[in-house]
Image (cartoon, rainbow, N blue to C red; front, side, top):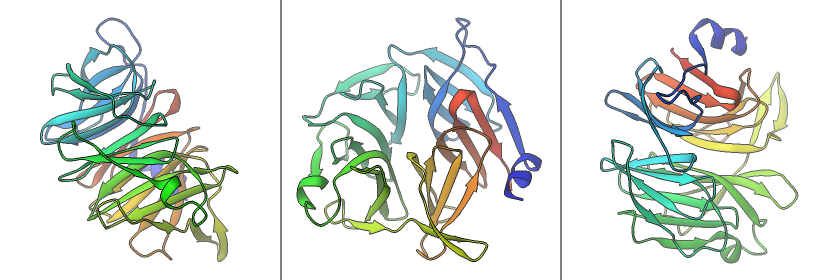
Length: 268
């Protein structure tokens, strides 16, 4: 039923769009702006409110994650060593390399803070993009929580959430309302047809939706796992794509990005 609702109330946009250079546009992350969406992948792109690509700018390196704070964009590239500060035109104006053990995997922002995570269990945060504070999750919670390889981060509603996989490949997520210095595990269980289940899909991204007051864990196998403030009200929905990378709300509409050029504008 959820699959049918998605098809009937959404626009499925296959990525046949070409950049000005003739390059195929692949988008892995996005944020909403006043005109629609700003997205990154193998290009820096502006999309209108319907999810159509308006213009693109070639990038030196592909980007896999994007955040916005105070009119500036911050990206993480596929190498994972630098945070790129980007002007609204798509021009990279600064490259910041925090001293980290691991590789950067994702970046996000709320109204005042930029957050990023690494595959070595590090959580870093900044209010200006240049000076970063570090919280070593694996070191601080050794023996209490399993060692984590973080894959995703999102922030909003007074909370920040990080997610990834444990050493044995189990998905896990943690939240903080204390400025990133105290973390609590978010249990990834849900009920389907009166059966208690636990999320097994591998995380690929995280998103926060203020209208829904929920975090969304984006996974392989097309799974989107909703986590509202009620921890007993988790739910799962699946989309016809291998991996969902990004879920970006714009008012009541939502843009989803996934593997193989999947772009879906979902309307209520």
